[in-house]
Amino acid sequence: MRILILSFLFICATFSTIAQTAEFNNTFKLQDGIYTSYIELITNNPTFPNCILITNNNQQDVNIYTLKYSKIDESYEKDYNSTLFATVLNGKLSIYYQKKLIPVYLKGTLCRFIYTRFVSTGSSSNNTQNSELLKSDICLLDIQTGEIYKLTKENLGRSIKRDASLYATYTKIKPGKKNKNLFKYISDFNTRNPTNVAVKEQPFITEE
Image 1: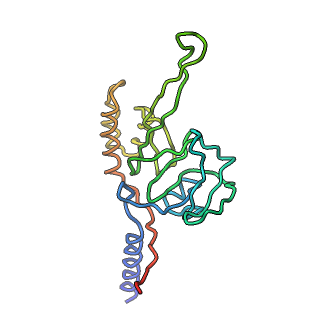
Image 2: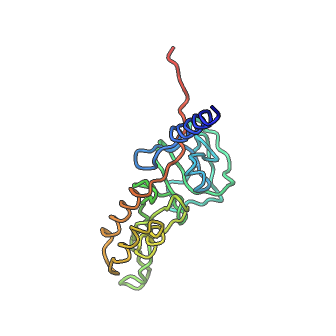
Image 3: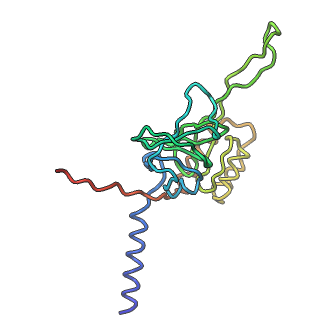
């Protein structure tokens, strides 16, 4: 009898865990708010739930020391005095990276986003001022470790290495291969190594 009770409790606990988590992918909707760490992200538990950052749209960089925030449905602003990892608004995830809030366009164990900035190319043709070039890099967020890095064969390999079977074929990629070869491994890794994230229950609303 005791064994049956323990088995029942184990099944209930397992079902509860499954029911409260879901695979983190493009269909998963994170809780709106401001996240101060990747731990908060994978637990879907922002320090500042249902809040937004007040940023100056005329500035390219986000100055964390002068930021303000407010509740999504309120106009009262407060000083933001915390670390910053990510924000979510209307279910859309943006990562704080290199002083910028950058939208994530592919969610999974390895999330993908594009880091764009201006880089100096030296003096212009008239030698009176420096010219700038717009440069973009594809970057990844490894949601299981919190590591953010530029997509290169070497950098991606640090994540792929956790899957021994996949890594065995990954090491055979010749140096200098285009990103399309790496994209396949990102997709394969995400499929083979999904990350489950806590699902926040929506408040039950009754119609009057």
